[in-house]
Length: 265
Figure (cartoon, rainbow, N blue to C red):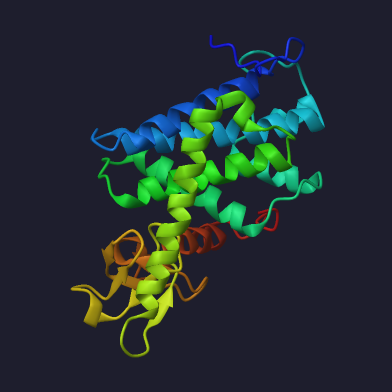
């Protein structure tokens, strides 16, 4: 196991959760920069998801060790089930830990890409790198603001500067995409891209062979508007019968078949 003790710190040792989170962040950055490998961005997303999940659990553990586990009662053992990202986020919010809606959006996108990788054929595109950069940005801010940790001490200056360089690159790419959209002739409708989550999706057949094009991840999509959440989603993720995105359609279907007990969700 790598010694993740900060240089010059002879007393403080990292918790297993935090140490493993830092290792996964290191791996995520390594894969993100390894652009010549076909599966690099796949492993970057998987590693960054693991890192973010463990950082959230580390903050829960500092609030109270039992909050990490799915069931607060009973005996805690090595195989006891722990909370996932969604439940960890909810528990931190309930505990008063500041996490904003932008953070949650980034985590949802990260989990969506992770699920796509695990359960479907991996088809690499630039949205995977964008998702990893957002995850890295969240991890650096969360470690600093919610854990009081300076990741430069744990990752080392070289790795840390590479990470911040990737985050700055992401912000610059978003800014460049926004400027390109502003330069388009005439009035165009701009909305959130269903793939990368940036506000750079242009709904105009004049700029794409399909009905929408993202100027950040460069994806071209046929999109539909969900009548229930108003999100733009790809046609493949749209349920025509419900006139809704797959997420809303599944929720409405569950409510129709199980009308009671849904308020808890």
